Image (cartoon, rainbow, N blue to C red; front, side):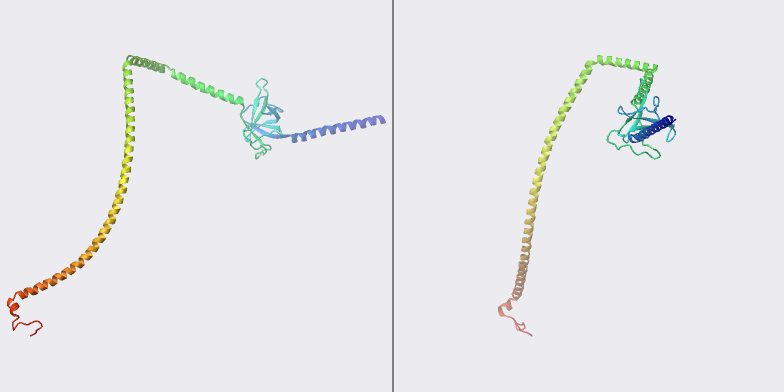
Length: 314
């Protein structure tokens, strides 16, 4: 009885220890997962999720850096597939990074490839408003780009074929045939008038040479005329300077002559005044002498009794 009790106690202790180990393992794993990984959200609106599953690899430059945690359909902010991924915390996911689905052509298994932008952008750490985790934008894979390019090429090819069909219609074929016939006729006409055309071309060449020589002559004449004009200009400038000097000398001499004429005018005025005074005195003397000569008797015999003498009064 005691042995069974001991076995029961030992079994209970073993179970308890095992449970504690399991719980500790899960707790440590959960904490380690929270510490070692960062979570991001991707919204795929145009790419197919075919081949993508939970725990599918998340790669950057071909290296696995994380895995897909879960995915589901959402309608907000738009109808898309919301994919939650976890990435090694040492992996730099920068702002402007893009994610796209990369699918193996042989196996059909899909992975998520993350591509960082060129340059050293800041790390993508802050979640947008209304989101729990940072959001990585959806990009496009090389296969999608090739598909788009092939689609564009097919569309362009269809347009080219349509234009070719339009170009090769019966009406255009008839016009092309008529054009070719006209070209053949023109070619035959040119061949028959080859000599005339050669003469015309030679005439044009001769005329071109004459124009070229005339242009050279005109250029030389212009050069000579420019030199002559420059010489005339220099001579005219020298003559103007000399004329200015002569005009200045003439102005100074004119001022001197004007001064002399003014002085001469003043002197002449004084002399004329004195001469006028002398002439007046002479005239008075002549008048007196004339009066005396008008009475010769009085001049010879003296004044009469009734005639007053000098200084006499009646």
